[in-house]
Image 1 (cartoon, helix red, strand yellow):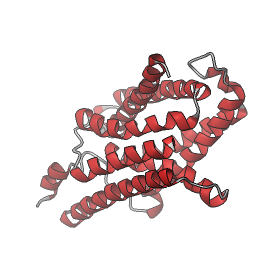
Image 2 (cartoon, rainbow over the protein chains, first blue to last red):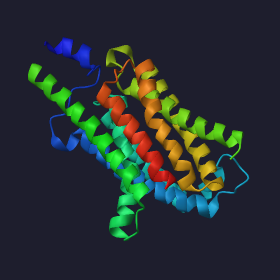
Image 3 (cartoon, each protein chain N blue to C red):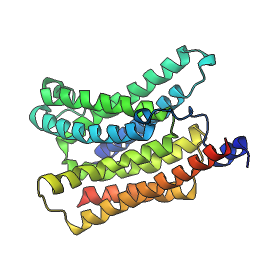
Image 4 (cartoon, helix red, strand yellow):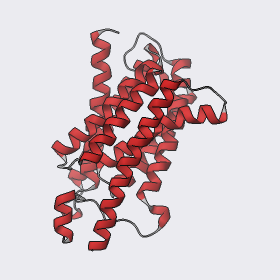
Length: 150
Length: 112
């Protein structure tokens, strides 16, 4: 199968070609984005608990909290890393890979803080990990095929 | 949980997905087509995400995070649908299976 046919069939699309250096690899920046996002969520929750009033639908009063600002800076950095990776990776793949942030937080609590995880939560964590692996593996296969064709 | 709060939760998800679609459209526009529209798309994407962010912050003050987070699971399904419609990204069987597992898994993790 020729490269254009493969692009049409698998829709490897209008995305930019992969960067040469390993440290510019978009999948690495997705991992960075996930780690920063997990940190941002925790900072924002601490900030929201301290400052946001329960009467307003928009949490603008949260801007008075340093935790919220720290959370926002971390989130913007995470967004920057993610936008960078989006130049090279299709949205439906990049977005789903970032779903691993939802297992990173409970797993960190279990590993570092020795918190217990209920069987139901283990089930959910396993499902997310399997889902991420399925998408990552399928995508690696497509990219390898494209690389060989080109 | 009122209907209004459910609507707000769904609006935050739609804002996040809309923002992502706009940003993706912006970063993949060919340079030959000019930068103005690309910047406009990027600004619209960030504006949409910002609105969703402040709504989410407001919701976090009203509900426990463990209660709100299961709804995040919907996001991953919505992205696959939106990317298919607006970006013409094809979703393979593996991608659908992965997205459903991730969405369902997140809902279960958060609900427990």
